[in-house]
Image (cartoon, rainbow over all chains, first blue to last red; front, side, top):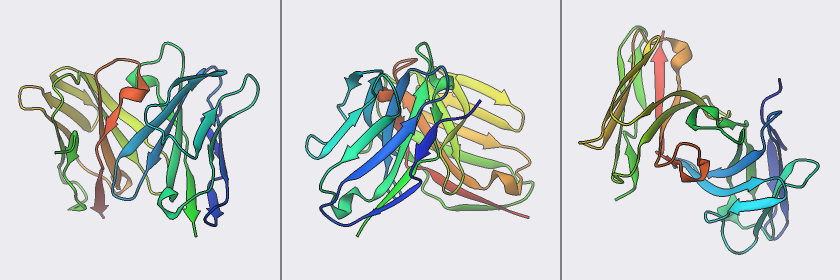
Length: 115
Length: 113
């Protein structure tokens, strides 16, 4: 049973370019969460999605960031016109619909570097 | 004051030592307390979680919660080099709302052989 799969693992972009990060949840999981981790800081919640629905995007910057979880395919976190401050590790986590703290599983992260 | 604070580390101990990792928090609504282990360049993996106050033991790991002091701890007995990682505490006021998880910044632990 494959875990949460994220790709790319590493992504380098120049300022002003777009970054797309993909996340495939664990089999049987219908809830996806995106977190951002800056050096020496904890994981910060960004957005929570279910299939075709954004449930909570309270942690996501209002501009340049968007997320989707289509009926088919992975969840995508999209960052437009990247700036140096977007450099971070972005983690996706998934859980089943009735999951609790013990059922939130993380991927290995996508590390974005903005030059 | 940050919502969750954690001993900054880094922490280096010899193999076999008892390790104590600690977090404090300010939000009295937190009821679920988690400890994650994160190896370098990997994602966090859940070690243990507890509900409300009390202790929970799992092998060499013991999680302790003191809600009256807003303080939680993770103890590692007989530490091993394979325990070398960053340990994140996390807290939530709801059972299954991952969007409510608040993470500490992590403590980096090195166990020296």
